[in-house]
Length: 177
Image (cartoon, rainbow, N blue to C red; front, side):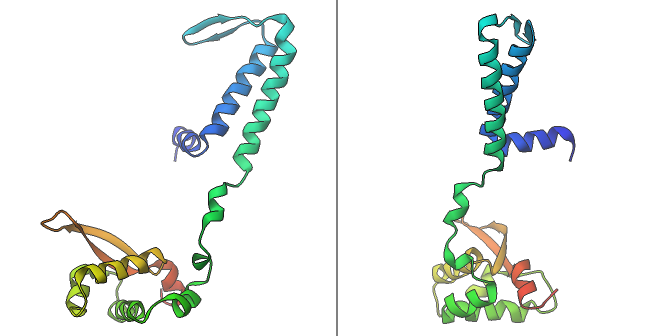
């Protein structure tokens, strides 16, 4: 990853922090120089009476950008308690009998490979259930972290079709490589 990609990633992830940093840097430059020449803005000259205000506000903006960068996001607190439980305990406590059957089927069929199982295979295996029910049970297992999925195509109705496999985290939890 080169320096430009790193800067772009930083700007995308920490936009507010980046904007405060730029503002603070400009204010500090205005306070410390006699004129500031920027592309498109030539000859920005600060008022002498406001240099100290510019310096103080610039320092505050830079410090605020650092604070915003290092503060944890509030969104991380919204993780459901069910996802904080270790996978094996989550499997034993939260999964329904049908979900455990599907997960067991995937474990059994993927002992020696990691190619995954197509959605059609599940629909044929569990033909006593509707395709919709099978799909939603697979999606729940994916959302709970037991499975990974990969889109392999679409139906005639333009609905995506997937291959499901055991997630790397669950694979480690059950002792597989």
